[in-house]
Image (cartoon, rainbow, N blue to C red):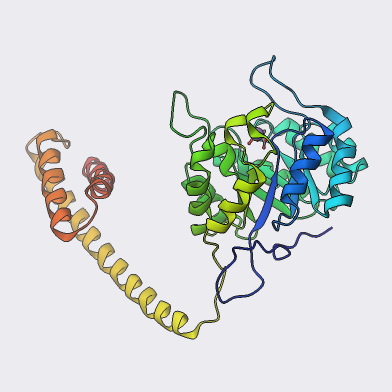
Length: 359
Ligand code: PEP
Ligand code: MN
């Protein structure tokens, strides 16, 4: 079974390049009843959704929370497929989930954030899937650890399954934050640099935790070139048995998809390519100048280090650092460069200078 990223077309797709649209996955956090599953699916059926998702075995933090209805929902998903023409996707967290899902023709499996942290479990799932050409999506582990995510993806890739995808659902940080899970965008960006051919899907629902942020997070993901979105939807979110605050009604999902600006992966516009070539050459030249100035600054730093050493003075001098910050933020302001960014940049440069002086 192969997954095409071009087989859906949300109504809101704009732009000159025909045929591209991100992979859309939607459906309830949990399958609760046959009625709820089918009513939700009915509302999604004409929205260009490729995969109807539903959690049937739910990993819950609290043992008293609703833990999913289990296997009986698999036949409801078969009805979604036959009645509404959407493929189906469920979360699997052990080998018996994998076997049951495959027996009931589930079209895509995903490994949740609480499972991808555990190499033993991921390996067991990979072994159960060996050679089965079903698409598998690996969510980021709950903690911000790129290597753990990469390791989980590699275990699944080596199992020779169907299309492997990565899903960014944000990372847990201790304490109260506005978003339920911190997106830490640099981690999925680093993952994409390592695996450019693995489609990256954003799950704005679990990043946001509440409906109000889903649009902004989705748009940011599209702006970064993500290949798809997985957004939770429920026919009656206020009565949902899990994640009630973050699920959208099918109608709200439709409005959200209509508002989003979808990006194209490439363009055949010649003017774009010519201008981009020129601008990239200009950036490369500016970067070279930046490196030359940086090398010059490091050289001066070394000379300062020698002087401090000769006079038995510490390399780090707090007052001087305060002066540098003051100086560069004033200059940044003059040049219209963001002051916070410049401070962050200079704290790295300054640390490197101190290291050089200590060598
Ligand atoms: C889910 O998608 O319903 C889910 C449980 O997600 P996560 O593993 O990201 O918490
Ligand atoms: Mn959920």
